[in-house]
Length: 304
Image (cartoon, rainbow, N blue to C red; front, side, top):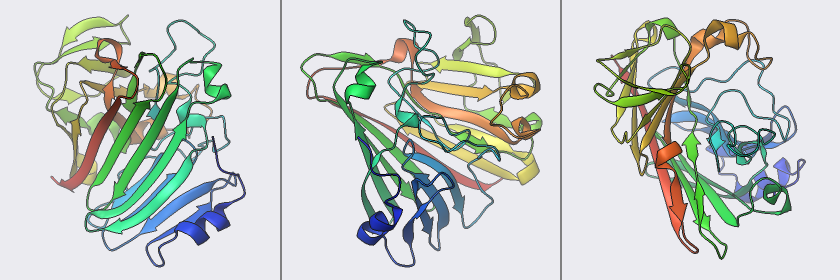
């Protein structure tokens, strides 16, 4: 289920809010909603319902987007906030399946754009069809509600529209822009257990603040607490709170792996840290027919 590649003008006619939000074509010709208010600038693409920009009036851009990001349908956009669903990382029973699921590479439907007291609310949706069932047999509907204001609020809702229960993983794979990854620190995970995917998923325990000094791919399971990303070069803190999320993923590929990523610019691995609200592995969600689940992440920024 997707809208035409060439209908940005028609979507703008239907949904635009003059002086606030417009639908334009991205470099690949797909629609992107661009927001400009006194509170913030922002962008969210129909490609994957993926946020690629949120810049509050009070600070620099908060969301990293690679200078070499691919915007072609069927390809993942490097940076922004990809939606991982219905599995995370590789699919356990099919090595040929797309990493992190299939919704991040699909064109979604634009359902509405609204201007409210908290900011501009953009709602997009997608649903199961013959293409998704090649990889995953279940019937579902997914909706992303993104509010662009003094905070960025993302609500990802999955509904089981079929006749059988299913189990899924999910993550809002947020690439946070940082001045220098080697100076960034995460607060709020002290004492938490995590699985280290760079070390055969061995279970370890976080002690104190998390500093990033090497390739990092850690899944903190049973982790519901808010975290803070300290970014001294930019002199700011990024606050990440979440609801209905029992996993937190922290990721940066570091230099060697980054060199193998054709869609990442030279040295750009130093300019982001992924800190993700998620439900993965043992925290996967089970939905019975007719049930729905909403994962919420709220991002805000302030001076150190």
